[in-house]
Length: 358
Image 1 (cartoon, helix red, strand yellow):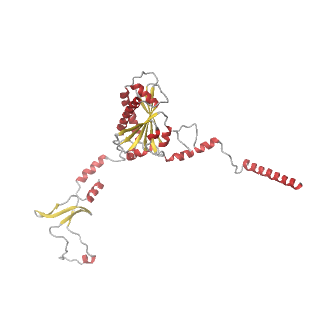
Image 2 (tube, rainbow, N blue to C red; image 1 turned 60 degrees about the vertical axis):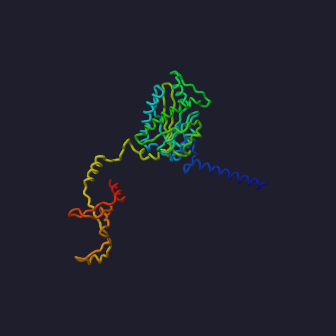
Image 3 (cartoon, helix red, strand yellow; image 1 turned 60 degrees about the horizontal axis):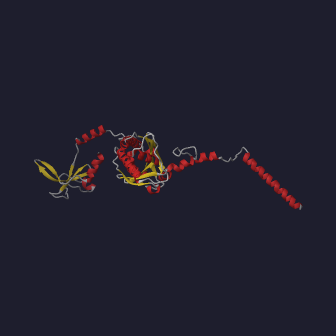
């Protein structure tokens, strides 16, 4: 019994010493380790409930989303969409015979899958095709704008809020009226891109379920343009989404800083250089034949020696400018002078040399 009591006392002493050592390590000034609170963890990871989703991300969230390309790398897009806003303001006024104001809210980059999950339903999604770019885009009309357009086109009184009936699909009349508005917007988009490139946007289909409006992989990046349409006390939003794959064929054009940028080209200097090239003298040699002789044989040539060529009297000669072969010709005589007559057009090598010089 005495041995058991001593063993118990020793174990209690070891436990107390261990607790004291742990307290010294955690509370001491030398190399202390502190547990992060929830606010510090959120700041580290970049999660902040008070920050909007469109705001700039920080921390690990910024690293995760760094694969997205910012639309600011395509500065010409902002000019195109600003032109689209002006065109839509005029065309929608003519379409609705009402006072319509169109404003550009935001232009942002987003993953296609994230956008589909963020669409507030019910809504109408229009899939359109960019013919010359050989790809698709997506146009979303929210429910507020749908009921507002229907109310305006069917003669609803001003000063009254458009009625929303939740829990039912859109009727055929509503879909047809919204489709007419979408076609007007796509025509304006075509006119907005016209100064850069010719693109025909054609409506492909109308969907109400985002799953059936998939035009790209969920992880693909896209440009999202949010437009606000106000008709006095009514209105709503139109969202235009263009995947980066759709804009890739005209990426070089969209990289311009302003419309018609030529990166330092001088038209006056180009015209002067072209006019001077037309008046430039150029030495052209008519080569009968070329043979290879040993250097010792050439050193021993004397006046009166004959060099035999592998051509006949009627053989064609080669016209050369330096080392570039131009064309083939035939020897002849014109008065007291030896002349050549062209027998073939300029060679492809000569044409490429002229193009590179220009």
